[in-house]
Length: 309
Image (cartoon, rainbow, N blue to C red; front, side):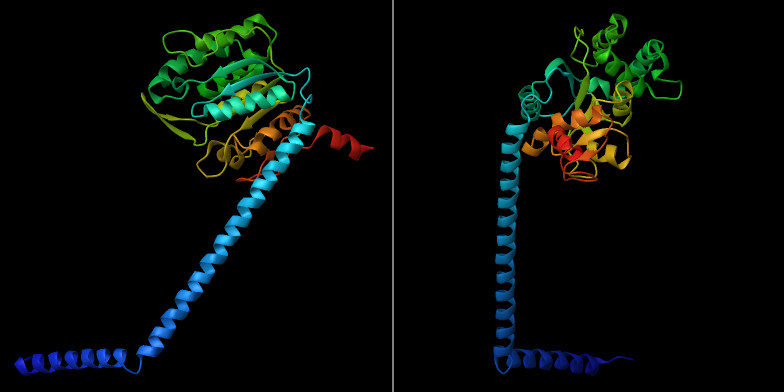
């Protein structure tokens, strides 16, 4: 049985150990402890300064590279899309700044933006799934062999949009009007007056977007439908910085569609006209320097001619 003497001895042992620690810390070991701590603080400070310098150097390099690409782009971009008609499809979540910058780049390249479509949140809203299923079943019969019974309603609607934007057939063009009709329009565009030869899709930074009507999940069937309508001449631009980004998921699934990351950046904007031309020629790549990129920038047509001489 443990008695009072045991507790007393234990308490004394603790007090003795504490006293020795105080004496040693303030006496013989004080200098060593202080020197050790000072050395570590100096090492950490030096490491922090080195990392700060490395970060500043990287920022300077990135800015220099961006500036160089911008200068190069201004020299080689003008006239590259002469005679090309482009449809721009803006998905929910794309900023005005990115949208305007890309449109300006297409104009510098002498491309003609014949149709500009904004996809509304209603296109992806879970609450309107039944409405979209009904609309898709109505439109599917007008898409000939572009879709089959196995594809989703999302892919049917996206195929209808892609065909409507690129077809010279008035009945097919009317599909775009179907998508913008009713009390819950899916897009902002109402009519198509001139068919496009290329489609540029601007995708959001994140694959998920909160809406007032609830949540909306932007799935990959949208891109499958657009690209299915125009397999050559379709490019998706967006962000692939994070695993959850829409463009990252497109690349991870290895869909046969050309993508350009870094939406809104100088390098991205410069790459877009050349990416459209490359895809039109049957060259599908993932351009940029973010997740799953396969090539930094698209080939320049003039450079290709020189290589082939």
